[in-house]
Amino acid sequence: MADDSGQNKNHPTGSHDESRRRFLKGVGIAGAGAALADKLLIEAEANENQAKGVRTLSGNVDITLDINGQARKVKVEPRTTLLSTMRNHLEPAVTGPKLVCDMGTCGACTVLLDGKPAYSCLVLAVDAIGKKITTVEGLGSPGAMNAVQSAFVDKDALMCGFCTPGFVTTISAYLKKNPNPSLDQVREACKGNFCRCGTYPRIFEAALAAAKGVNRES
Image (cartoon, rainbow, N blue to C red; front, side):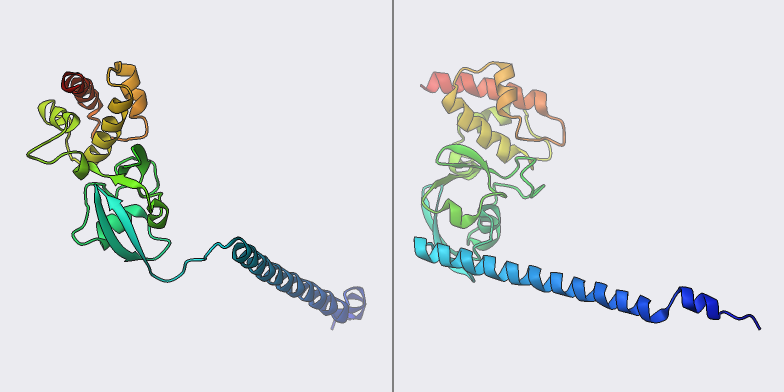
């Protein structure tokens, strides 16, 4: 039988276990320190907010939103987006803005906040309190469409329709700012909206046609 006593002397078990215990102890202390630091930071932020008179929202809160000229009361969690609030929590629901990417990259959920286009999937409902929210429904109705909606129908500027409300809302706001745009300006104005069907030529054609209609109305 081979004598491995020399090997045991070179790699003593006790020394290895002691090093392992020190390592685990160090990890435990570091973890506890990080947890304590997080706790202290949270408490400090809470105290700072309290000193400033900032109220932390939690649970469900009652809010009132000005949507298409109507005061809409709803109860939601503070983390609920404006898009989710309109589509899932209002009765009747406001379904014009579409849930597609839910990441603020496609523009299908575009609404107007005080007249400016915004992705409603990136806006918290509680942050929209006190602002005038306009969706595609507030721009016109099937019996009384605005110039952009009418042009989209005339120019057949829609296919699946998911992106259409966002484009209509974006273009309607842009034509108020620039009622006589060029094609390049229309393309630039629509860069935040994405059409998966690739109907861009007709969308841009509709926008230019709507601009002529807006000019005639004015």
